[in-house]
Amino acid sequence: MDLKKILSISGKSGLYRLLTESKNCIIVESLSDNKRFPVYASTNFSALEEISIYTNDEDMKLADAFKMIYEKLKSEKAISHKSNPKELKDFFEDAIPNYDKEKVYVSDIKKAINWYNYLHDYKMLDFTEEAKEEENKEDEKIDEKVDKKTKTEDLTEKEKKPVKQNMKK
Image 1 (tube, helix red, strand yellow):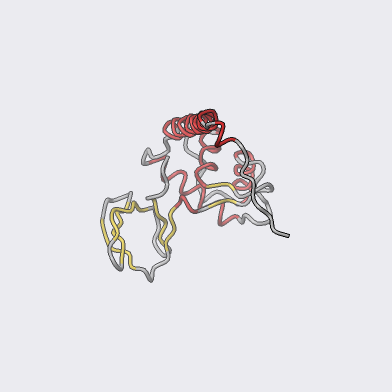
Image 2: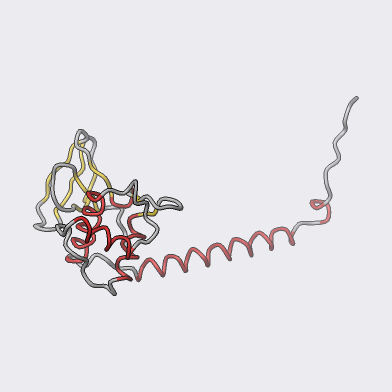
């Protein structure tokens, strides 16, 4: 799931897809009605990729939180973001047990659940690509280790000997 081009724009409900960038604005498209419009630099907006949730350990990316909710609900839709605060907190604690209860407010939980449901409705919660990307990253790390090992084995004896420096006293 790629959240880099999914935006939340302050003052507007819903989520938006980034289409293109120009010199002084970006062009976005609403996920709900596919209407396109410019968003100027003076407007506050955030890519969902940049948003994190406070946890007791370290901050968790929103995509990881969505994945935990998705797995907890077995790919079903979450409860309504309009549920009472106790239900929202209980749901969030079940899905993300280590979230920081002091720093994450009910309003934050409402936004996260609303965004999750929004992405779920538009079938944008696909975690299969993420698993493939993680496998590719692991393969790349292994390849790098093999390359480093091969490079050190290819060094000639002259290159392996330490260089002596003349030291003046």
